[in-house]
Image 1 (cartoon, one colour):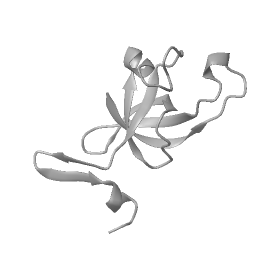
Image 2: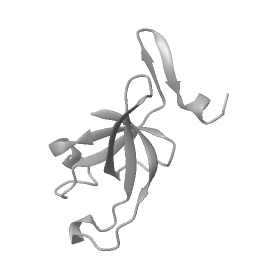
Image 3: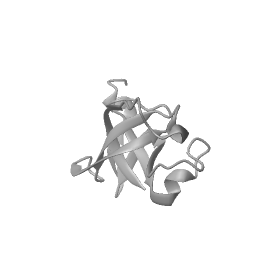
Image 4: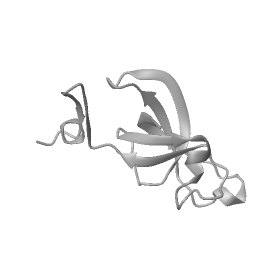
Length: 102
């Protein structure tokens, strides 16, 4: 599983029929300090994420283990929107702070 930042949406009007109805997002992978690693991927959005959000992305066979992606040919799925994380006791990210909320 990786952490990533949703940077956009991907629209495909022609695709394998089993992918109909799925929403695709462009995600840049980030490290534990929120620095982009240079990797990016297209992931099925199973949780209703949006641009700018930090998300958890499962890939490979794990990507096909959500109710939305079961038996569908996808290699990455957004399976969670991150609220916060700490590294070695230090706060790295708080969604409320990123949203401008208190």
